[in-house]
Amino acid sequence: MKVTGVVAEYNPFHKGHRYHLQKARQETGADKIVVVMSGDFTQRGTPAIIDKYERTRMALQNGADLVVELPSAFACSSAEHFASGAMSVMMSLGVVDSVCFGSEAGSVDDLYPIAEVLSEESEEFKTILKNELKNGKTYPRARNQALLHCLPGFAQRQDLIVAPNNILGIEYIKSLIRMHSTIRPVAIRRTNSDYHSYRLDQGFASSQALRQTIRSAEMRPENFRDVIERVRMQVPEDVYEILFERFGNRYPIFPNDLSTMLVYKLLLERSHGYTSFADVSDDLSDKLVKVTNKAYTFEQFCDHLKSKDVTYARISRILCHILLNVRSADMDRYKENGNVFYTRVLGFREDAQDLLAQIQKKSKKPIITRVSEGDRLKEEIARRQFDRDVLATHIYESIVADKFGAGLLSEYERQIIKI
Image (cartoon, rainbow, N blue to C red; front, side, top):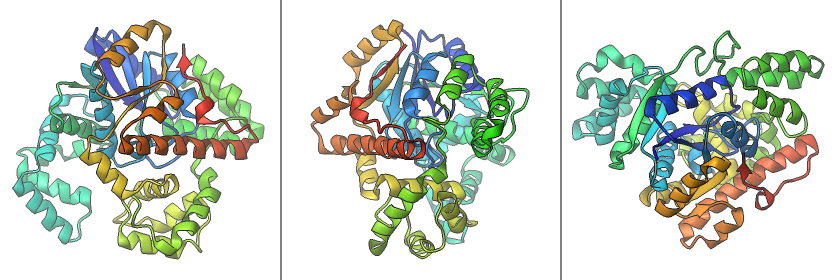
């Protein structure tokens, strides 16, 4: 059985994602496709627009055979940690032959040399990087200068490392190299709409564009039917049915919906500062302490704290870390001990039970198909990671319940998705 892995957020799932799954199967000759998917919080440091169970259903209806969850500590982290967490899950399954990702380059050959230099981090590379950072360069610019010195020909291909999907692709390859993995990376050229595009065009729209369109429907309910029809053109029909039926009772969730809970958490931790949370420097902690009286919404906090040295996305991830209680000490322990300590199954197709059986036989980590099974994790570090995931979902569900007056769904009561 040939198995290909895909890393995704499906926030929300659209026709471009279906195309990627189809191409992944075609290019790798895969019999089955496993998706490692972010849960209820994403790599941008924001809540998913709709919950992980509905997004799992969308994926399984459109080409995925099995969906497993990327632990929240990695799902809302930097590209490097996001990728290392995802590749750790892929390797632990014991059955994945290749991992297939979209990229602007469309070729692993273009990305592999960069990933090799970044994975090795020679003394020359580290010295140049350190000096550039001392001179006030941001990390991406300092890294580019180090690459210019250490990688012949990089000067002509600097565009590769600024394109968002290429960045993730390089990090996937880098992680596989560092883990001495036999999993083969495969790149598929991303077509049509840009990753950050806000437009719904004739080709595949970005998830960003879809989220913005859905947000306009929430802001102007009288235009809902017109807006949702525009969305319908960009998503598979079964995804449209979910988005139509769940609108206004289970979704959409946006960053500002976290505002009240975030302010509470910031006030609760204010007297101690925020440096114990992942990726929070002393300077950022001081700025956060000062800005708690100047901002109220999630997006206002990001606007107040972003700078030429610290991006909006990084601030968003930091706020997400604080809200979800992701501590630097925890992240350090995870990285030192292999990143991920279990595999949480969110859903599978009935005709892929043989795949699940193979994973249960070959996996190097415990397989969790019911949340209650997390109670049996023996290692303290594994249990701590799992408890953080449950907490993240309960925080998300409390936001849903508050916004829509819906019943609060406990993670322990949710059923695995079967198609």
